[in-house]
Each structure stands twice: as structure tokens, then as C-alpha cells.
Image (tube, rainbow, N blue to C red; front, side, top):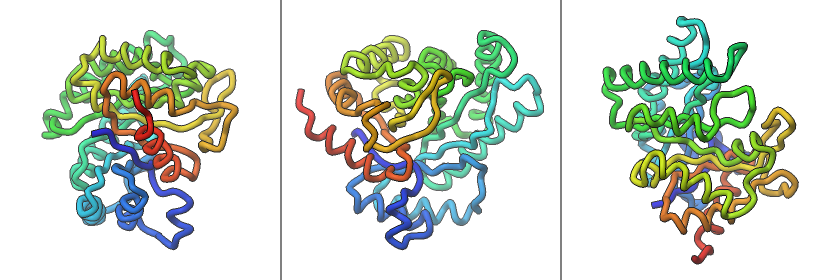
Length: 283
């Protein structure tokens, strides 16, 4: 079943007097949404007990929870000690999402740095093979690890690169951030055909079964010559992308991803807008 939900807690959540993520489970449920992404972006700063408490709240509301690993990850870093920290960030995120009862860990793969694109991609590929080994050694093979398409040209994370990384092992499935793709490619996602092209490519490379429930981020994003500048809300009609053509493409291909809104402060509202659009679309 396709799922829609917010990344983190929106402005409306706090304006309603809520303070803690434990309360987000009921908030998301009352919004008519299905999932929630917990961000460890700035580091893992909660106790194991609090993680269990959060997980119990989301389980009670039947809301699926995922985690976004820290932003510091860079598997293309030439320094092996820094790479070890990246492994640890992913594995710690896995430990905590498991405590929460979730299965998905989203992570940013790498930045190009001062080396060539090819060298950075190759280094990331090799390090992700090591990450795969750590995943199995730590008993996390039943979780899903989701490298994300990135919005800045200096970041590793084109659609083709992410699909290539996911070929390493079945424990990897792609996080397709459509706002990032649109920003990186200077407004490339406009029509149903634009979305179908990307989705059919994923299916041809990874197979329908692995793509059917892929992870997705969606938001409108301001971009410039170097790609992503900042996240916007659905009130923006300058930068895009628009969700409706994607809804048609998903229904046509019978795909049911886990779609997370990363709008700037209106995540829950915009997630509900996507769900409403999707439910109205008839092919």
C-alpha cells in the first residue's frame, strides 16, 4: 500500500501545543497520513528508552516510521577514519530505527570533493560494499538501507548513481527525492512522461519487485546553476516539481512507494495534499 507522511514535525504541530515526537504519532494519524520520517540529521541525540517510547506510540497509531541518518555521512571521503564514522552513523541509525519498530534508513551517500566524479563514485561504491558486510554482521539484513538522490551538483547522488549503488545488495533500495532530481536537472520534471522515464529506468535496472515499494521524498525546491538552494512549500509555483504527474505515473506502473514530504514547515499539510491528489487520480 502506498504511504504518505511528513519528515519530522511541522510548524502546525508545534502551533497546536505539541512538544515531543511521541505526540507526532497521533498528530500524523489525525491528519489522515500513514508514515513518518524521524531525522537524525544533526546526530543521534535520544536515548534507547525514548526511541522505544516513540516506536510504541507510532505502533499504537499504526503509522510506519523510518529514519534519516546523519547528514555528515560521506562515503567518498579519502580518509579511512572519516569513512569509519560514516559506517557508524548508518549502523547507529539502524539500531535506533529497529528500536522504534521501523525498517528504513535513508542516507546521503557522498560528496565529490576534490577528486574526479568517477573516482568519488567508485570510492562510494566500494565503501557501500563494506557497509553491506557490516549490515549483515550486525544482524540488520531485515532492514532497508536507502541511499538518496541528491540536489546539488557537487554531491554524489544522480538517479543513475543511486540505482548503481542499489545493485550491490538487496538490502539497498533507492530513496528517490524528486525535488532533488528536479533541482539538479534545472527543472526537468514537468510531465507524466518525465516521471515515467525515471521510474521505468529504475524498474529496468533493479526489477519491479525491488522498486514497487521504493522510498521517496517530495518537495518543491528552489535551485540555481549549482542545483538545490532551499526547500519550499506547495504554495510555490515557480520552481516545482508538481506532484500530480507523478501520481499518474505511479498508478500507471502500479508502484506503491513510501512518500515523505520535506516541505519547509508544511510537511504534514503537503503530505496530505499529495495523498488527496493521488486518491483523485483515475487512469
